[in-house]
Amino acid sequence: MVYKKVDKIKEQISAISIGCWNFGGDWDSSDEQNSINIVHAAIEEGINFFDVAPVYGWGVSETILGKALKGGKREKVLIASKGGLLWNDKHETTNNLSKASLSKEIDASLIRLQTDYIDIYQMHWPDPNVPLEETAEALDKIKKSGKIRYVGLSNFAQKDVEKMMTMIEVHCQQSLYNMLERNPISYHSIPLDYRTEKEVLPMVRKHGQAFLPYSPLFQGLLAGKFTKDKKFSERDIRNANPKLVGEDFEIYYNATLQIQRIADEMGHPMNEVALNWLRQKPDITSIIGGVSSIAQLEKNLHCTTWEIDDAYMEKINEILKPFEDR
Ligand SMILES: NC(=O)c1ccc[n+]([C@@H]2O[C@H](COP(=O)([O-])OP(=O)(O)OC[C@H]3O[C@@H](n4cnc5c(N)ncnc54)[C@H](OP(=O)(O)O)[C@@H]3O)[C@@H](O)[C@H]2O)c1
Image (cartoon, rainbow, N blue to C red):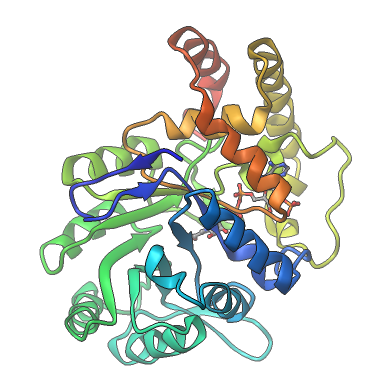
């Protein structure tokens, strides 16, 4: 395993980690024992970082991660969970970063995760109805109580990150980032108020914050697993991604054919090329990729055994030029 270190976080963090969203069934491929086995195999391979959220599987992903870390494993890893997205019986979500809500949410997460503390507590999405001051006050109180160690912001505009930093220390950021979504303006149908490569990367670099790129394999597209006429099962969350099911799919799909050609020339699979393109950037701390099997995990971890050299990096970046502003 390769580890990375940033100023704001004491521990070394594995460059490849596990995103636990799909443990909870939102990707229609969930099986509790399989997810637990993935966590155990990941720890065996030196992964020490797991990203999760209450809303993933409506509590189920946190619960499964909690079960998987029982028996002395919890202390060996860092858990990054989130707060600020609530759901109702119909599974409709609302943003809520109020002090009252966060103070309840943290306790529910700790129960599901079967732990006394969360290492990095990330605000999942901004909440325009709650002043940043109130959220900062809530986080400060939760941190002083020992229930969290570090604060993270996910999907926040950088002007709001800067404002938060005048009130509370921000240790980590998480944004959408992969080869074909470098400065994306939307995620599923949600507009994004930040540009990852242009704004977030310089910010984390300047402040020594950890940076976690999400959807590093473009939800599977950059693993080369989709055909042009692929169909997701009805329950798969990827149906909500217009870039995978809408008219734009062809643009992204065609780009993967070009990346695949370079990957073939290099003699490495595309998933490893996509992961190394991220991993080799100094601003990227840990790639929080999702996997649905141990076989996928092993395939992804193989990227740590080699590096893309400068000449190939140049060739790849030439292909990716049209995606600099996407
Ligand atoms: N902060 C946020 O708002 C936010 C938003 C999205 C995600 N996230 C975090 O980021 C994590 C990862 O993002 P993501 O799950 O959206 O996307 P991702 O990591 O780009 O894609 C995960 C999917 O790619 C496929 N895959 C992975 N490795 C593969 C391999 N070697 N061969 C073939 N297929 C492979 C699997 O698809 P199959 O399931 O089809 O096998 C897997 O479920 C999430 O788990 C979550 O923790 C955060």
